Amino acid sequence: MTATITVEHLWKVFGPRPERVVGTPLGDLPRAELRAKTGCLAAVRDVSFEVPAGEVFVVMGLSGSGKSTLVRCLTRLIEPTSGEISIDGSPVRAMNAKQLRDLRRHQVAMVFQHFGLLPHRQVLDNVAYGLEIQGMGKAARHRRAAEVLELVGLDGHEHQYPDQLSGGMQQRVGLARALATDPAVLLFDEPFSALDPLIRRDMQAEVRRLHAEVGKTLVFITHDLAEALTLGDRIAVLRDGDLIQVGTPEELVGAPADDYVADFVRDVPRADVLTLRWIMRDATRDEVCEDQPLSHATVIRDAVDRVLRAGRPVPVVEGARRVGVVDVDQLLPALIGHHRQVPA
Image 1 (cartoon, helix red, strand yellow):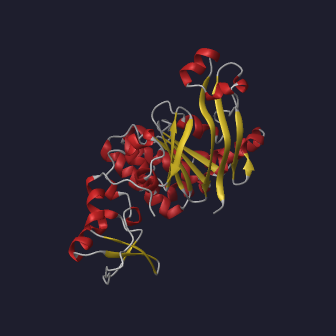
Image 2 (image 1 turned 60 degrees about the horizontal axis):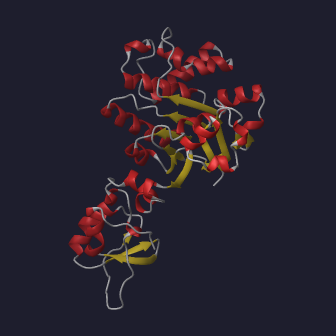
């Protein structure tokens, strides 16, 4: 699959003479020791990844892990210290000021935690603001803004002002503003962390719905594991600027790369995330498995009733090929949360 975003050996070091840290033994020091020796902070350290077109790529980490710095480096809102970034094949670090403006106006849009709406402008003009910057005429940009407001469920609110809207509605305006310019890439920097839990869940569902409808490439920053698991096709875990693991939600929960990731996912109900491929086993010679098979991609929780009713091993298939069997002995450890192994 073609990569929309490619990041190679990205570093961002804050402090005096940051170039001396990149690719040297200083760059391997723990943050506190590096600061004591040099006065520098390595916010992002030698990070590489690709984001295919149409993927929801979530970057997750605790406060101070470097995730917001990373996403701001992608469009040089923060200038990287070293490394390469390309978006749709164009090298971002080689762009001049005009090319960078065009990238931010046309190809990439950002949705922030703090909505950044213009308080003196009605909703319609807030949404149309990016189109105005592009030079689109008033009638055309208002038509486009009205279309996007309908897409995010805010038709009828065009002539209200931001302070007349709830927090969730204001964030929808921010989302509509980002979508209005029809960018290839949307960057979300913890956009829902200021919202209450119910509105936050609604907005997560809204992002999933919009992604299904418009198919943009999304990079989503969060410190919330549940949000990452809900939204991400793949998740990158950062710690102190280092990229610890990149994988699907299933891979992070089923095979965490180290104790840090394992701590993150410890309380996740494995049966709600993992599929049968993680718990199936080979059939023994004397086992007869004539039941209707289950797909290896079936979530464990969804297979419980079927396996319990069968009373014997149920075949697991990948396409037309049988790849294993599953029975109660495989289900129970997963349901109580103790099963952890790399799938066959």
